[in-house]
Image (tube, rainbow, N blue to C red; front, top):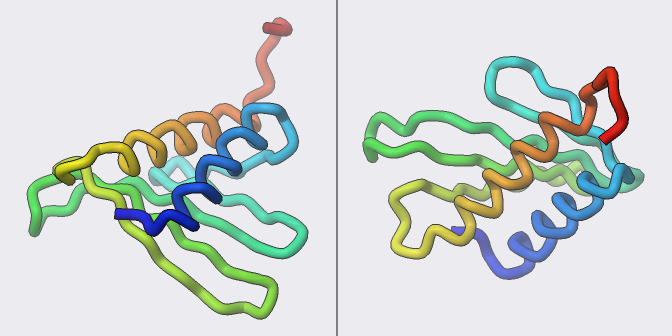
Amino acid sequence: MFPEKIRRFVSQLAQRTESGELVWRYDYYDAVFCTGPDFSAKLLYAMNARDSCTQFTFFYRDAEDNDYEFIAQSDARDPTDYQLAGQLFDTARASGLALPYSY
């Protein structure tokens, strides 16, 4: 479960990505990466075999190179964080797409 501060930040990342302010790189191994002016972020989607569920792991590095890791699992009692992470993941993967038509 994400702490409230992280939940708000992930929500802001999704909004800024959707608006085109942030562009993410997708590595085709179920991870997306973004570098901002004072941070870097990575969102990894994976199967958690121990808990028999899928999860998103959000990695954050601040301007002082401190690393943080937060997890949202699909089997959580409250799926809000998992859904939020999924929204960011899909938005981030699409952020670098060059489509032939404007939508």
